[in-house]
Length: 271
Image 1 (cartoon, rainbow, N blue to C red):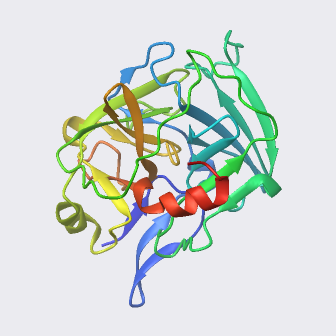
Image 2: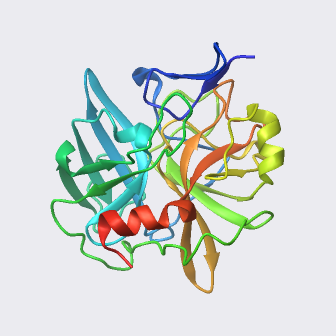
């Protein structure tokens, strides 16, 4: 069986022996999307970042999460071949009209830190950091997500929130001008593995896409959050799904942020 990865920006394959299981979509197919999600209200997801990535031959779109006034967390596959990135925060619309709380920060590749263990052939360690060239000004529309305290929780069955911009169905052909979100349960790793033929590791986390609610192309790098005690706890970064369609019921797969706390702390100095 051949599975197209819907959320990637690289031309690569996941292999089992010599047979490719996963192929990555080309740049021109990259768009952000949350399928069958709800439209976000202003300031509902203040930790959400939009990333416009300058690459050889054009641009790609990904999501990210605000960790602090100078750090953004995203996916390695979004950034490892990026020449630059324009980070936008404080908005729910990407229509080209400046919103009152919009902040845009341009960053060159020297400020992008891709995980040293990132492997596009296996999609492992799909995590990266962006150090901003100017500090974010926090307000009710722009706030950081909270990193987990440890890697102890499995989150299975917990309702979690994923958010992003873009196509709201498989038939859509353009990026949505508004931020959308879904609230879905976390799946057991064993259940997720049955869909992805052994690709899933302990450093990944999967969501159910029942009801055709899913992350999809270009939501890559965006947040998966557990809302607990009035905190937005960042537990995932959107990594991949199946390109047969985002409404097919296959689990969405995220990099498991708690598994990378030591790496994040070492690179950023955040506590």
